Length: 425
Image (cartoon, rainbow, N blue to C red; front, top):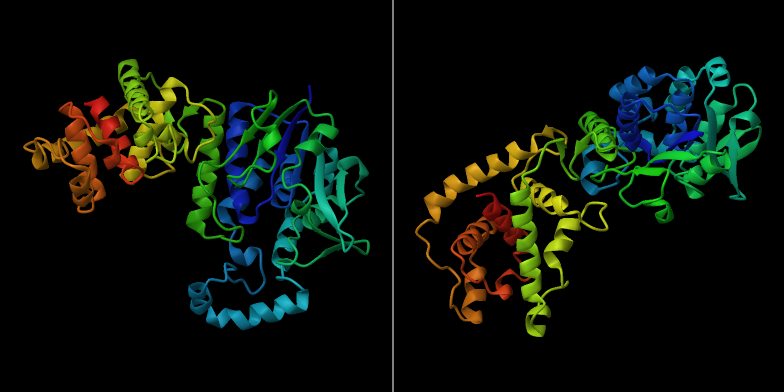
């Protein structure tokens, strides 16, 4: 059964794929086929050559000057243009001359890494997507149709993101970025007789929704937005590599978590169940009244909040609590690229919270009880986000009924965090 690796395009975001590939190799996967578009096609060259250490070294060391002649940050924001004023003139001069940014350094780098003998001797098949220019017809080309020393040229053609980069010519035929046709060439892998596919996206928006949740097709998608396609900031690249590594291990159930990463561990079912039923009971309450229901954008607002920013169409019972803890971690500014002990981290948050709560709110008897709606909304305007969490927690722990109008969509996040904390303590 042939197994394929499919690599999406995305410029500097290709660092994420390096982390993914490292994790996939550690798990024990090998490939019969590799397809790619744009930066995915370039990364795929090294996979076909089985130059994995070269691939990791490339992304651990690459900088913008290895990609562009007269490099400049291409986000074109006013601030970045001002801060790089001395680079504007040479960049645009070369941009006009080349009909796109001068990527001569990138071409030299890719040529230096390409080994024609290794490539054609490899038992791994290779396929890329590019687009002919100017007629804009797609080209899907595989290894057995490529002549000596042409694979590297087709890979560069696939990565020629016109008009940012110039058109790339092979035997007088112009080519531009394959992403204009198919930025994640799963279909090409299937045409090459793949029966199992691991596909690595570089954007949170999937290229092909119809491949989601399909048997024998595993989509690995970044848990956070990876940023700009020409952002070669070293810290950002390192973060992308780590994120790809962790996201892949999570995709194969070697680690757990969605927006954060945790070692696999036994979860406290009592706490999980308590939190789950708190969500169900709250959402049942707001759906009992048409008046109450109309103040929310959704009839399951807390569940929708738990599902936000993750690729979950439905939540298993343990997902409710895992996502609740992750939202709490985001609120308290935990780093996203570390591995945590799940049980330790939520108990740590609760310990710190509890200490401050007893200091600030233990004497507070009933902040919201029996207050008229008008007075409630007046007092809410004076609450900080942190105050709201403490106030909700106090009311929950003291079994005080909280008017849903208070929570509405204004303090929904804070109410959810208070619910998590109340189920822990």
